[in-house]
Length: 265
Ligand code: MLT
Image (cartoon, rainbow, N blue to C red):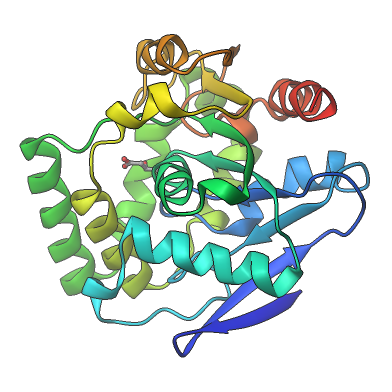
């Protein structure tokens, strides 16, 4: 494990080492870097994965000022991680909120981008009702802690098959969601404030893989299809039996799609 400090904030990351174009694995909300364990275990010897805990999650610092969280701040912090690791060109792979941050990274640091993986994510900003829901979740976490969301989210995110047949994935997700309150509140702020990235899609000119769980209740495959049509040359893989956390729910299929994409770069 390595750490880098950016504007007084300590950020934790793992660098698996190895050759080839490095791949930055950016976790979703409210997860941490351990979300990527199945892919790191399966492919960490073959590719150089850089796997950070975003600010507010895992072993990274979790400042309480929620205004210090945004997709742009996250992109800057990821750039600091890459600079610390000595990485100039990178494939950015983001799941869900990680995808929102990948769009910001592409806008700010397009010269560093060698490829994109957009998993279970969408380009649109939050509609007003989603902003209101997130504000209520922020209030809930501030007054009662993260327990309520940690209890509710597996039911809302995972596929029916995962919930009925894979109790170990449900347990694993709970561990991956065990993060500081300040991180929850800051990341909810980030997602509320994120800009719409739809108009960026046509300008993406790096190899792009779009992955989505066939049964993702939050980001249905239709949102991925729209992105695939807008990003020239992009490929899309639908992961069977998976909901929103497709890399944990159907790890073999997700890893296979990632491996095929990366090996072709
Ligand atoms: C995530 O998985 O990062 C979040 O569920 C995304 C969201 O709430 O928009």
